[in-house]
Amino acid sequence: ATPTALLVGTGRGAQLGILIKGPEVLESTRRVEVIVLDKTGTVTQGRMALERVVTREGTLDLSSAAARSAGSSSETPDGAARHALRLAGAVEGLSEHPIAQAIASAATRVSGEVDDRESEPASAGGHAGADTSAGAVVETGADGVVVGSPQVFDFVSSPGGGVSGLVRTAHSGLSPAGALNAQRVLVGRPAWLAEQGVAFDVSAPAGAAGHARSDNPGTDLRRAFDEAESTGATAVVVAWNGAAQGVLVLRDPVKETSAQAVAELRELGLRPLLLTGDNAGAAKVAARQVGIAEEDVIAQVLPQDKVDVVARLRAEGRVVAMVGDGVNDAAALAGADLGLAMGTGTDVAIEASDITLVRGDLRSSATAIRLSRQTLRVIK
Ligand code: ADP
Ligand code: MG
Image (cartoon, rainbow, N blue to C red; front, side):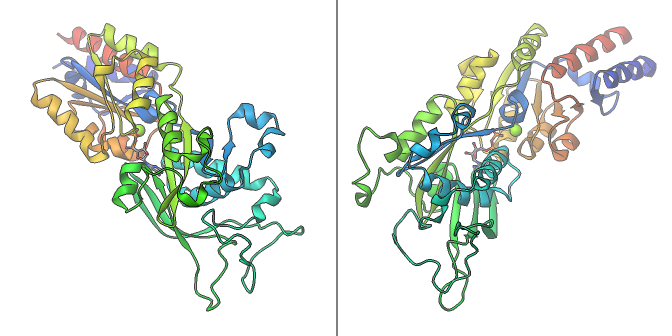
C-alpha cells in the first residue's frame, strides 16, 4: 500500500469539508453504482416552514405573503385554527423532527401576537359558552386574554409516525375536584393516527353542517390534506377528542445546490435514488426539482425499513452509497457500502457513516467520491 497518498487524499478532503474516517474508506468509493439520497435535510433544506393551518371552521395562513399583509388574517375566522396550532405546537415542542420544529416555532410566533380571539372556548368540539374559567386557575392578561404556554405530560414520539402528549392549556382549567383536566393531542400522518384509533377519512361531522359548504375547502380536512400533498407540501393531522381537528401544511424547499449535486453524481456514473418517509407526492416534486426520475423515488418508507431498502439493493448485487442526516438514516448509513452523513445532521448519523460532509451541501458527496477515486488512481 501507499499510505502517504491515502493520507494526502484524506487531508485534501478535510480542506474541502469532507471528513473521511480512515484511509480504508476510499477503496469502497471505487465501485459505488447507486447512491441513495435521503430527502429531508439531505436533498432539501430540512427546515420546514408552516404554511397553513386548516380546520373545519377556518384557515390560518402563515405564508410570508399573508403575514406581510397584516390585515388579511383578521378577516378569516381563524380562531379554531389558532387553537389547533397552539395544541399541536405544545406537543411538537418536545420533538426534534423538522416538522415539529416548524410547528412549534410557528405556534410560539402566533401565540405571541396578542389576540382576543384566544379567549374563545377552547374546544372546537363544542361547549360553546362553557364557563371554563369558573373556579379554575386560568391565567389572564390585563385585558382578560388567556396567556401562558400549554403544559404537556406523557409525551410519546413514534419515529416516522408522529407525536402525542397530554396537553393542559389555561383553557382546560382544572376539574371541580382539582384533578388535571388534560386532553390527548396527536400530531402525525394519517396512517399512524389510524393505528392510534383516530380516523381521518371523514368529512365534516353532521354537527358542523352549518359551516360545511362544499365550496369551502376548510370544511373537508381530507381534501385539504390531499390538495396540500398534491402540490408537494407535507401535511400532518392534529387530533384530539379522538378525532382529526386540523391539517397543518408544511413545505421544505430543496437546497439550491441539490440539482447540481445530482448532475455531478450522474457524471461520476452513479444512479441517484431518492429515499424518504415522506409521502409520494412531496417526494416526486422534490425529485423532479433535482432531476431524479419518478421510478427512482422510494417514498413512505418507515425509518426501520430504510436499512432494508439498502440491503435489498446490495442483495441485487449493487454497490450502494447512502447519504443521510437523521437518526432515522443511521442504520441505513451503517448498512451501505459507503455511508455519507451531512455534517449539519445528527450525531448518530455521523457516527454511523464513513464520511462526513461538513458543509451539509450535497455537492460534497460528488466531490468526496471524485477525490477518493483520484486518490486511488494515484496509488494504482
Ligand atoms: P424523512 O425520511 O423524510 O426524514 P420521517 O421518516 O422522519 O421522514 O417521517 C415520516 C413522516 O412521519 C413525516 O412526513 C410525518 O408525516 C410523520 N412524522 C414523523 N415525525 C413527526 C412529528 N414529530 N410530528 C408530526 N409528524 C411526524
Ligand atoms: Mg432526513
